[in-house]
Amino acid sequence: MTDTVLEMTSDSTTAHNRERLDAFRLYLITDRSLLPEDQFLAGIEAALKGGVRAIQLREKNLTDNELRVLAQDILKLTQKYNARLIINHRADLAHAIGADGVHLTESSTAVRKVRKQYPGLLIGKSTHSLEGAMRAQHQGADFVTFSPVYDTPSKQPYGPSQGLEKLKQVCAKLDIPVLALGGIDLSRITPVREQGAFGVALIRGIWNSSDIEHESVKYINALTGETP
Image (cartoon, rainbow, N blue to C red; front, side, top):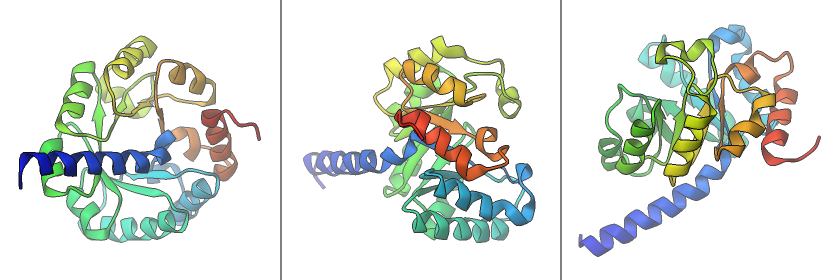
């Protein structure tokens, strides 16, 4: 294949992926520990009913078979609501079940390698510095999460909060969507969007709610500027 054809193919894939990324204004990351086990899938569907259109399955304490079964169950729900399912770390599983993409961590295989092996997947990348975010973009990531913007228990292992100024720097330097992650609540949607964030990634902000569907609606409205 000639270089020109390769470039045309890459440009076409990039444009297609950008269309698919419209769903990522609110990127909801799973955490089974925050919901009763028998209500987990119902919680996912409630979030989807509330307007969430991008789910990241991030469950590290499951066997391969358990993870696959859970991923397939969630995929049925995301397809029902025309939403995107992203699998944390496991590009092979995402490809095997027909999920929309993979979210790579700092310990995952390099973005470039995943892109070559699984060209049809959307690729997200967790970043915690400007350098890391720029490297992810250079290697071909479709979007990045930048964290922790604010203090939050789930992101304490990655050090102190980055703050809004560092978020602004990352958003200004990157051409791909940057999702603010870490300590985001409804009152912080406007500040992170003002720094240039494409959207937000959430865990506790929605899963801790007693009414997941209604809480999802509130976040979607805050991100789109609509009123209930």
